[in-house]
Amino acid sequence: MNLYDFPRAPNPRRVKIFACEKNIELELINCDMAKREHKTPEFLRKNPSGKIPVLELDDGRCISESVAICRYLESLEPEPNLFGKDSYESAYIESRNRHIEFELWTQIGISWVNGPIVGSLGIVDQILEAKNMSDKNVRSFYDRLDKEFASAEYVAGNRFSIADITLITAIDFASEMVDLKPQNDLENLARWFSAVSSRSSMKIK
Ligand SMILES: N[C@@H](CCC(=O)N[C@@H](CS)C(=O)NCC(=O)O)C(=O)O
Image (tube, rainbow, N blue to C red; front, side, top):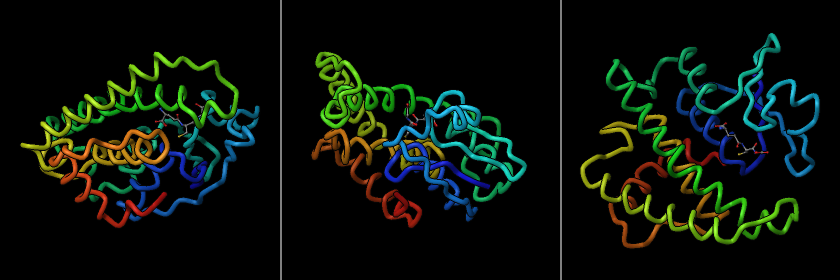
């Protein structure tokens, strides 16, 4: 199976970490975003959204969207379970993953698009007010996570799941590329971050 990837792109990283946790080997295909290879007609046939990651199966069929790809990998290799073991746990992990995607990742995305790195490319009309607001939303989401981690070891309860991969890739990207590192006084969030960062899968960039 081929995974269309680009170094330091956070969504392909989610899938690479997930595959590593399951000991699944993926052939990485470099899709050079700087050269806009993800927008070529050939690539748009693989994913009409023009985004990576895309998983290409050996028969040529393609799957886009990180969570959909991870679900496919989980069905191939059910253990260790990362999506939930029973109806309640599966729904709970899904809800937590959606909290991180829709309430944190979206805000980091707004700060990124309206921030200096994307600005230097000169390809979008930036809105400073939007960035100020999303920076604020990211910081208050970090505050919320810190409170949640006072009584939960992981994002979805007391074991590692896909929701932790979604969160750590968000925080790493926000810290390294968007200048939105979590506030130093958030001790519960820092405890979770240090525990999850120490997993060997997290060395994957
Ligand atoms: N919801 C998608 C997001 C994918 C995504 O935004 N990928 C980025 C790279 S990390 C991308 O391809 N951006 C290019 C673009 O939006 O044009 C997923 O979970 O896979």
